[in-house]
Amino acid sequence: MTISYQMPLPAPYPSLSIEEMRLRIQSVRDHFGKKLVILAHHYQRPEIVELSDIRGDSLQLAQYAASQKDADYIVFCGVHFMAEGSDILKRGNQTIVLPDLGAGCDMADMADADDVEEAFEQLIDVVGHESIMPVTYINSTAALKAFVAKKGGMICTSSNAHKIVSWALKERKILFFYPDQHLGRNTAKQLGISPNNMNIWNPKKPFGGLEKENIKQTQVMLWQGCCPVHMMFSAKQIDLIRAKDPEYKIISHPECSMEVVDKSDFAGSTDFIVKTIANSPSGSKWAVGTELNLVNRIAKENPDKSVISINPFMCLCGTMNRIDLPHLTWALEEIAKGTAKNVIEVHEPTRSLAKQALLRMLEMSIKL
Picture 1: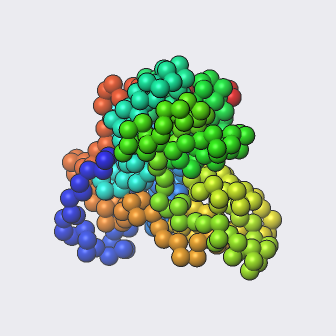
Picture 2 (picture 1 turned 45 degrees about the vertical axis):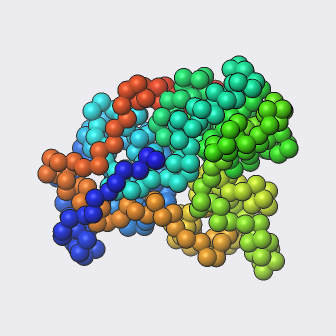
Picture 3 (picture 1 turned 135 degrees about the horizontal axis):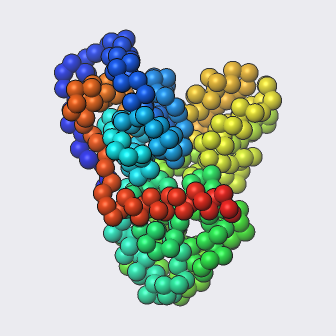
């Protein structure tokens, strides 16, 4: 697990009014000016996004923070692996702070570095070292990003997965994709790989619970991991929406199941979803398969369109929503006192290897 224990907030933070917290946050921001940057992931609460300098996906935010040459403190309103990414790409001695250490990622925690390394060694035993290409989704720990650097593999995002997976399949016989099975499956299927040539690796069983002959016939080995939020959407929900109003276009994130993506009109990253709906005609109707805070924000930013969730009973990402105003206020005031808490640091050699993998991904994304 990458999540550390978050101590309960001291008084008076749990009892502060919203207005008082806003004033305290702004006071710290005014004091530091450009020396302090607040980042907010797309899935953050509206009040957190409102008080941030920029919102975006994890890689965009980490790159933005690294480009802020005057910034000494980066407060990352996201989850643990995102703050790690910011520390990996940071400029000089920037301090990266995560307001709540309990803000982890269930998907990232489904792939433990030791388990992945053991699985890789077992695959090598069956098919040989030169046959396996490891690719980790950016939603993974720094240790797993470092692992692909050591093994000649690659990192991907939901935006460039098509390019990276295509490259990997040309380079070696078997793609070993983790931690999200659904992004791997949906991407490989779009590239013409039959689901029959894909297998799921169960880390709790020897050789992933597979027969060795089955492993030899596999083109895409998918780690048994997923995003619990994106698993809350179903093909049946899409059928109900279309039966009620066929004018709705369905757009989903590729972390959704294959059945949901197959029934969608469009599928893509959070940035793709935001831009597609923003650029659509006035009066268009959209049912969206991604985290609810983002769906609600898209609806608010596009009042001339109808934007709903595919799942009418959708809930928020629980770990992402651990970042709230009391924790942000506390984190900022600890920085102001010179006693920064929840500092996220990726140590060597993991940091250098993970950075190497990230920079290689960015370079190849342009070339491919």
